[in-house]
Image 1: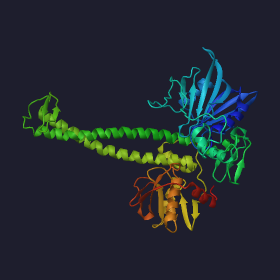
Image 2: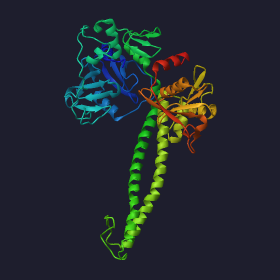
Image 3: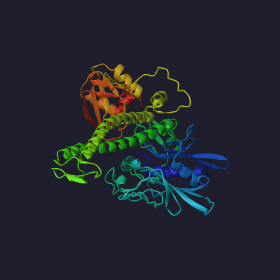
Image 4: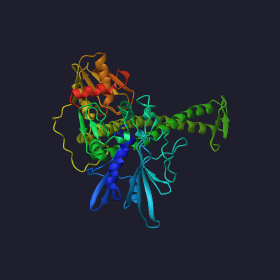
Length: 520
């Protein structure tokens, strides 16, 4: 991770210079994972932004223009507890990726009080936690109840994220025997920084801040340790992080919020239906119970509270009814469950397709945003739009990646997926898509050999939701083996015949291919 402890140390220094002793005027939630804190000091407003999800989870200064705002229970907790308070300090825990924003303000009942906003930037486990003066959690962006790790819920005591590495004061290079030694033993040193120090034997505290981004790989750091000549430098770390911040996340927040809520609702609905289906499948045993009664040899006109079948099963009966009436009641329950199973299986199948569609739309919003395409898919699902989105002029070409006389076409959204699969694709062209997850349809035209196949697999993995996973499973087949699914959009397909391969993305190769096509 480029944002290590030393990066944060220098970022805090520049943030303190701007925000210290500012009054927090307003807190906004401008996307699902981004909060903007508006400060006021001496007739001037300053803006602190906190982004919690990857890529580039961080905090930085700068005003993000946004016409839409979201709300949440956590946002309301932040507003209720911090608006009007003074930011008294920003501190780092040792050199770890944990930052304390300390606030002071007046409480109507308690008088002068202090509160702390804890930002944890731990890669996949980022969090923003509001803590009272006695270290009691008030609220958190991500809540967690655990018997084996930290519990992060209101009214529990806040505990620091466990870290068993040592704090760095100075480096004895006589002990540093590998490029990973420092990152494995000391807090705050990323692998890339550890390698640099191992090779150059410098005091990290003496290095001057000079933010830079390698445009070839989009990697960045608080000073230049890259060999590339394709670099962009920045005056401040906030300028760098602001440049990396994807502003389309803000404009997309209304679509994303709708999709996430609809996904959550339908996933829960599907789970309930699956429980109902299981219950009805269990009820099919009622047919056996009815047959037990008729084959018992007992007088069917008599009444019993229970009987035991030939295999030892005890049947509890309604003693107000005859054996025959009980048997008929069991058959009635069996028939009802049998009818319900067919109905429930159809509903579950429809919900599975809807959830898959929503996951694909969510992927498109985040990665390949096209407002017209997104709205055309969301309006039938109940999305309300304030104004009619204009259909873009048909002057955008499908994304093409050319390499070794082959051409790979990438569907950047569902409409493009449908086009390249059913119109552009010819029977013998190869088609790639990530297995059971959202991603782009990839069409390959050209010579099929080991390298072109592997590159196709990598491109499909790269343009998918799982691009950061070490291994991704990709399905591939010829276009002639792909069929549309009846009653579903054309980008939802069924594969009559296909193969699957596990692939590791060679990011160096992919970057070379994208650069050769002017796509990076």
